[in-house]
Length: 308
Image 1 (tube, rainbow, N blue to C red):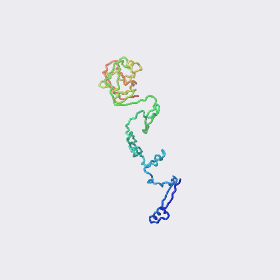
Image 2 (cartoon, rainbow, N blue to C red):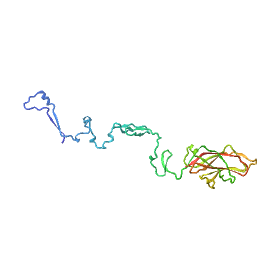
Image 3 (cartoon, rainbow, N blue to C red):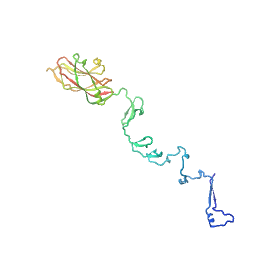
Image 4 (tube, helix red, strand yellow):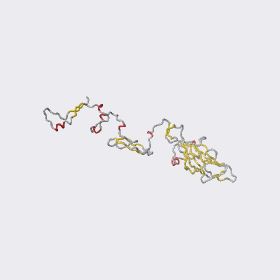
């Protein structure tokens, strides 16, 4: 039903009633009586002020879920973040410093902006795999990326300050052959401590060594010295042809004066290692047809390693 209004006089005289000033004044204040209901179409947009609304008002039951546009929220600042505070009210977190990340700190604690320290470790299980046979590398700009793993075993080479393995690698006589090691002359040099001191791990494949004479000299007269190496692990097979090789040879010849002292200066050699350990196996043999060369010891320094 539409809303209707009836205007009635402020006072109605009965028959024979006397007229007074006060009753006449009531005639100047007529009564307006309304009836019916006011429809939505009867109210102009913007015509109801907030002062005319009942307080408090529970509007939750009057608004459909998900029916408030973001533009209806209070205006904020670019970069702010909305979150619930300890009272359960929505509040804002001011924009953070450039490069900071939003750190959540568990239930009951407000979030905050924090600087990335760059020293946190990440468990391997948290990395997203790039697929089978992939490895992480960096490109020319420093960005981390997945790349195909190269086929075959990767080899690494490390060079470092000399690590002395021995200063008493003495010779062993081998009068039978100048090109074969003395059967009892093999020495096993353990590189484990030397490699550990320079922080090199992995499986060694080639050792880079420097060998040189120390305080003694060689006097050669139809004689010479040779250094042999092997990469097999069974000492019974050290002298089997094909299992050893001659790394260097020096001396020989005949001096008219009965022999001359010679120092063996440094020689850098690349020696194959066993893939199963960190042992260097050398044989320092003397071969003499005549004459007596002076005793000569060699120093062996490890100066580099190739490993997988």
